[in-house]
Image 1 (cartoon, rainbow, N blue to C red):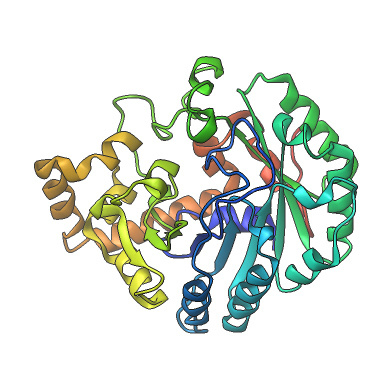
Image 2: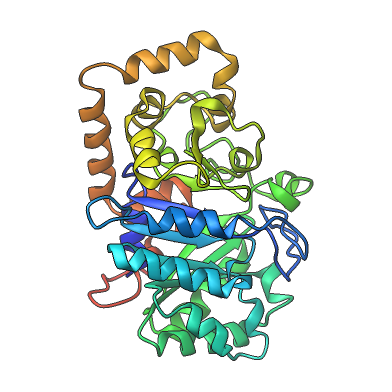
Length: 356
């Protein structure tokens, strides 16, 4: 399963499920969006197993993405969730900070956890490299590729002109001969970076928390398409870290809880919510505007009315299809780094030619 396949599904309502397994992480990267560290919440394991175990071949997400914190601090849970998902036909992807790879090896417990995983992605940036050397990460990723799994890298830099991004993307392409996709993002002022990133990041349109649009411009939001399981088991309609961490979750963005609801209920709420349809097809302004929608009754009511119109469901489906057909690189030009967006097309059989 290539990274581009996953990204292409991102605008499709309920085509994927994002699940955070823990806020714990052995690393202490200065830019961590979740402020993860040695201590933190573990998402309820029993509830997660029950929830994913409720997937069926007829009603399931296409992709289950496991993240954290560091999801591989819970290798048995990763293994169980991936196996349960696979039994229903859902493919699993794991994103790791590579804490286990400081010597370049991949412990057996990690390889066992990845047995049913279809895609593995490593976070690499200047902060991770201070704790896990680049050469060690590369060596470990080669070992994971030897199992037949497709791999990719999630790379973060301060801005498009960050020389680190030039260096690391060239190093990945050379080391893996363009057989590993690269998704490049810019640091955002959230989590541990909240106190410093805004001052050091070039204010490009895609580097702030205000979403992909320019200030004052309303645009459709693809990030309100996949349910996200937060650290306490709450399920939100948005992966924005401020939404994931907010308690209470803004009501229009709350889909339920893995301890109380099954996938069918979460999927139905995600796909059929009039407000979410409006957000996905027309937008409501910036991410800040969206989070505050519950405190603006007139705007909330307008979004609800627009999403309840007879053609709203068809428009939602059409918008998702058009974005999917436009491809992964087009989506990342809005939500990732425009300059490096085409690198998501690397990797795996049938890899398309990528410029530069």
